[in-house]
Image 1 (cartoon, rainbow, N blue to C red):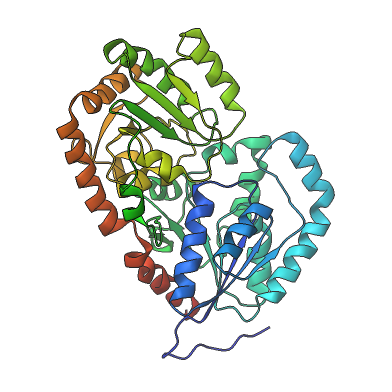
Image 2: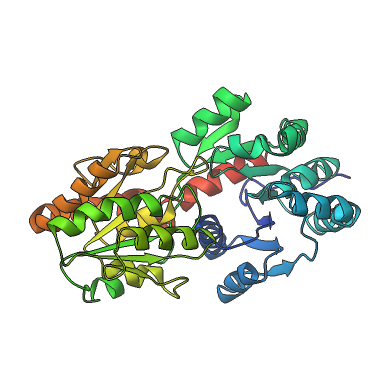
Length: 388
């Protein structure tokens, strides 16, 4: 079970990516863009994924992908855990085959949970270096099912060569709460790739008073708090309009909040939209009211920055590390709906201030959040691991 050493002239040639996911969110978009950027640098990539729509996203970019049939969900609900227990032997065989298919890879990269548990020790047998990507703190995940996920995670924690995190916020969690040695952590920004900003900048806005929130409809993402804040917004700006885009069971509860405040004429639910960036391009301001404990980055935040949109958000989680209050956006105290409303009204009533915030945000996006400029940082970390 040995593998050839890489020549110094070609430090990184082949990257395999393994991911179990149950939906499409910012993490999947970042992973796809990362793989495409690696491929454009002449590195051969191969993806193994469970979710059909994610596989289609990769295929659209001509990224080689193999669909894995067995899903083991040990961090969802009890029904998923029981199903995972039944399918566990099949999952072990599936990932054993996947590692065998990766025996010539320079490095295996993983961002999901269960594949880290199963693939990492198997890859160790073949001496294939493994890199974990952790987009967010895992505290709530660890506490599920009497701590079973944390037990499994810690059992293999010493095996990956390095762990990539997107922000100092997530880094602090893994150092202080998980005990990962700082030298094993690398902060690499999430980013977008080949984003046609000019196309979106040509799109006409809805009106001068349109607030757009693009996010999965999930408790903690803050759509209910935004609706509460919008009560005051509508009082001071009667023509204001709030547009939600995103799917999820939480939409039912958010609609109930809208009805309770009689805001049906001011709030619109778009559900899943084909192009969220087009919707954000039509906004006066983009609001991201997340107070979610698992928030690790917020890809829609940097997409709004790319579109030169002023941003309003709560001052919590990784957001203040991405949005500089008063320069690239406006931040309200976590959970303070009255302050959130006032920040939104500042943007709506001061177009020159809004334009300045948007311009500053776009400059930050261009310098920090484009794979065109930062993919070499990823390649450097991958190559270092593969040659260790």
